[in-house]
Length: 338
Image 1 (cartoon, rainbow, N blue to C red):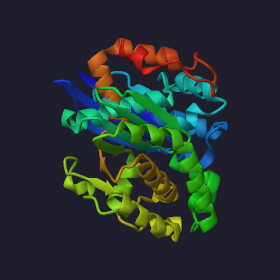
Image 2 (spheres, rainbow, N blue to C red):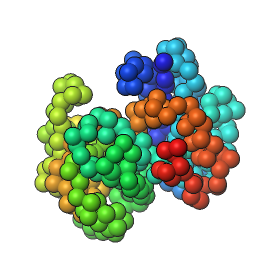
Image 3 (cartoon, rainbow, N blue to C red):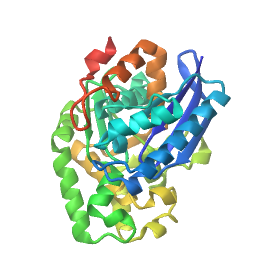
Image 4 (cartoon, helix red, strand yellow):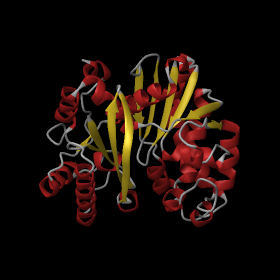
């Protein structure tokens, strides 16, 4: 069985085509299309018409690519920027009318569940009780669990792109100390309850996923991508603290020259580092393992293990026919397990 997943994020549309053999997704092709929605749309704002046009073009290209590689209709979803837009329903309808792709928005809690599943499968059962951190452009996902799916999952409006716009004037210039302080204070307040839960649970293993953590890990000395996915990559809190001071004194153009920091993500790298460090400190995590699998792999795994009926349920509850943007979508862990 060949499966494809399309992920509409804050910066890119990403496509993964994988063969499902023995219950494990084996990637055969990956591709991405630059959108940079986060540069045009702040979380909670409407997606403008020209951005919808670019989004539809990228989705159409991804759908054609998936078909060319012999995959069925992509499992397509959009994350925080589209999910929080007041015109979310109009965006989804427009994409469907132009491309035929049934794009839906996943609740942040479900994103955390899927990412946790991917990390659990990658790390294995010997990881034991496990905490997860995942920094996106619009949100931060946090989860903890002892089994296949998390016992606890949360999505917080602490994404690196969102905070860069709110506190760092887009992140293009060196950050004034008072802005860094204000940002850290906001993150600390937003993480207070969630981090207390993680600390109380006492995880044996802590895992970080997302491109933000991958790039911060490389900046702090983790193995480069050419070492392959199976190289162990650790991110130490002390190293991340030192990286914050380094990033704060540089412009986005200067940050892009550092190891691991790509030009499209350079502006938000400081906010990502502040979120990551604060989350680790408050939760009592000295080190996290940087995992290459995240939400796309988790979605494939869930589809393999629970079948098309699970995905149909997700689409039914989280589609444009569900509650308007800003209202909770009633898709909980217990309901999804059925």
